[in-house]
Image (cartoon, rainbow, N blue to C red; front, side):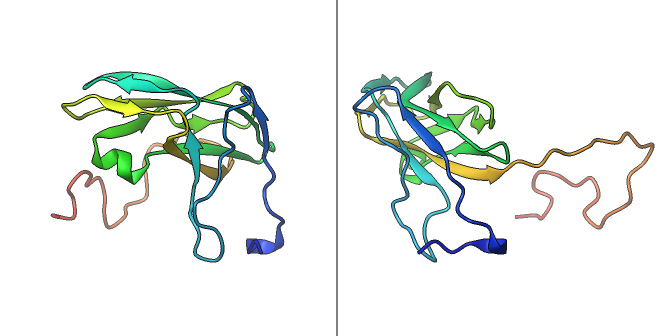
Amino acid sequence: MTEVVGGQGPVRIKVLKLRPDAELPRYAHVGAFGDLAADLYAVDAALLEAGATMAVATGIALEFPSTHGALVEDRSGLAMRGVTTLAGVIDPGYRGEIKVVVTNLSGAAVEVKAGDRIAQLRIVRRIEAEFDEVSELVEAPRGAKGFGSTGK
């Protein structure tokens, strides 16, 4: 049973297989304490050389409602091997193939096999903000302290 927050039904996302061997995104763990993001799968094998960046095809296209989009995130197992994702925003109006841009930060080539989980797809609600130019900002305890500001 899907737990719904705020009385809304589950978000329905249409998936078009561009290739018959493509896999739909899916959650490895579901339920009350399930995964935050669904797995995305490579549709082709690829060799990601050390230091290289490439787009890995998933063989699917998505149709989001206008209220939602997605972020493409790392898989922790690949990140431990030095493979990280880049360019991970999918807007609601995009209808092309989902390709995962990955970079191999390790010193060795990494093999991706067809059917491997290569990234995670986190569904997000789209919020359109208005940006107002001001002459100053209200002071906050953190102020302008950035990277490493906690001392840890």
